[in-house]
Structures are given as structure tokens and as C-alpha cells.
Image (cartoon, rainbow, N blue to C red; front, side, top):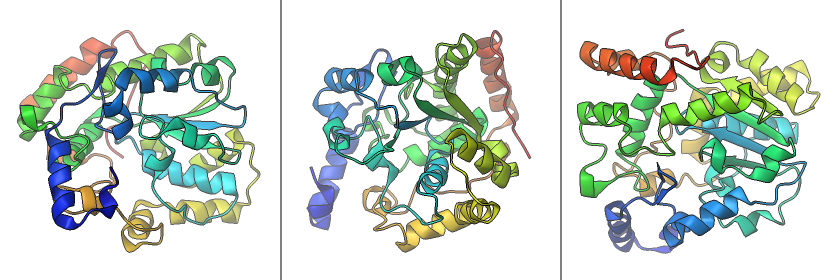
Length: 313
């Protein structure tokens, strides 16, 4: 359904219908209510796994709210070798959200993105060592950001079970891995850690949200080198400036990147993709008891991995 073509009253009815739908489940993972997944979850997820990747494709992988839009814009500028904002939304290049055949005739290099867990990304892409950028962020800030996102995104709400509910309900839900979007944060990052450590995936560039916040120029230089793009120091500084949280949010909401469609779908009619973009905001949300519960969960679930996160800058 093309929500943009509906008049406001019809659109709101359609969005309420979407909000009330149950989330598709695949291989133990709860997934967003994208039309492609609602139509036939198994068929679309298998199509992603069997997708005919090209050697020139670049795949951006991240758990939701890890900085995907930010890195997507940066990499798009690197690939085009210019500090011009891309037109449109990253969802138009998202494997689980789109008809995969729509990507077939797009010019190389195709820059695709996904939140699906490692075991579900295109097998050919992994086996052939095509380029992957994996973005990670500390789980406490991810939890806060996703909570605020889920309250407003009709593809993430789960009205039949009052998800995400209150912050306390939500954080207990996340610790129990209930409503485990894309398998849940811990499982998502564990899979990537194991795949990298065991060399199942090789041609992967890891980006940490907090490192990008602390040293955007240096991190953009690293991404450009991985993508084999020789950019001038001035262009790298320009990309860092254009893609700062403030400037990228302004470009999106002002229409510089095309029509900002997010408020049309949002429950509170605002852009739920850009909130604060800071590191350490979790301290304004987690109570002492909630933090202790969350730390115990992380310790028990990640003790046999090398995963470490930065929680404040």
C-alpha cells in the first residue's frame, strides 16, 4: 500500500491497521512489519539469504539504532566522492524492506543495508568476501534509542501486547529477550563477534558509534581506505561536517534530502529517527536497579566473547 497517496484520514486508518498487526517471526527472530515481510516472511528472508550479490556491492549491517542512518550517509558520500546529501531514505536500499528485484538494475557500486542477523545476510556476499561494514553501539544507548523509536514507528509497535509499554516494562522485556527484534541485541552482536573471530567473514570493516563520535575525520578516513577511495583531507572534513548529527538531522527535516516522510508515519507526527545522537544518555533513563539487572544480563550473555563497549565519552 502506498500510504503517501492516501488522504490523511484514510492514511491514519491504514496506519492503525498496521500498528495492530502481529510482527512476522522467522528463525526465532521478531521482524518489523514491512510489507515485503508481512506478505510472505519465509520467502522474503530466504530470498535475502540467496540474494545474488555482486563483487562491487557494499553491505551495511547493524542492529537498529546503532547509527545506521549516520554511517549510511557517510558511506554514500565516500562512494560518490562528494559531500552532497543523498536523496531519499535508506529504507529504499534495505534488503528486508524492499522488493529485491528493484535492486537488480541499479548501477554499481550498489550500497545496500540491513538489520537482519549475520546468519540471514546474503550467503554469496559472505562466501565471496565482498565488502561489509558492520556498525556497533553500546547496548544501553541502543535500548534508550530503540524504546523512543518503537513508540512512534508503526512497523515496530506491537499493540496487541502493549509493546514497548513503559520504560520499565521495556527494559525487563529486553533483558528477557522478549520481542527480540532481529534476534535481540546480544544475540545479534554475538553472531558477528563469532563470525569475525573464526574468520567465517573476512572482508568486514568494523565501525563503533562512539569512535565515530569522538573522531569523525579519522573514522571516515578508515572507511574511505576500506572502500579504496582516495579522498582529499578537505573532502573528508566536509563529509564529517555535513554528517554531524545536527547538520544531518537538519538536512532531513528541512527537505534537503527530499521529502521527510517519517512524520507522516510517526505516532506523534515527528521524525523519530533523530533524537539526541549522544553517548551516555542512558544514564538519564536507567535506574540503579535497572542498570544492575541489565549489567547482569550482559555479563552472563557476553562472558565468553571479546565484546567490549564504550558507555560514555
